[in-house]
Length: 170
Image 1 (cartoon, rainbow, N blue to C red):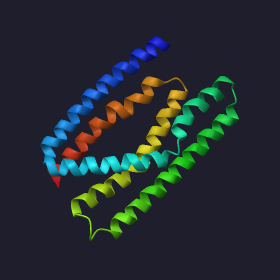
Image 2: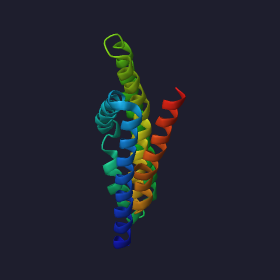
Image 3: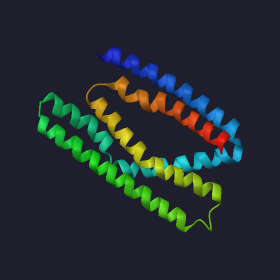
């Protein structure tokens, strides 16, 4: 189980790294240096705020889901899953709303392109936080490959296609 899981994890990580490189090269070529810089800047801020939005419940999920499953404490597991989703969802939405309000309040001082990029990153914050929480829950259930595939393989492909579609449509 460990060897098979490790092999799948390595394969998914390598595929995800290659896809991520390809997506970043494609975005840099398509968007140009200035727009790509805005994208990376907004994404970096989203990742910083994501640390607070997850409240470290993604890390705790791996431990507690595994422990509650192993000891068959199903009521504790249900309660942990429900409450962790409520906390991460609520905190990440609150951070996104406060961030969006701050960005809107500073629109006269911030360049329009950066403000729009930061607003888009604010909208993605709760989705990313919940996705990472659910991936950690899957890891706690010993479903490592299923936990890594959406964030490392599917997300970069869907994101690149979305950005390209928006770039050529707008």
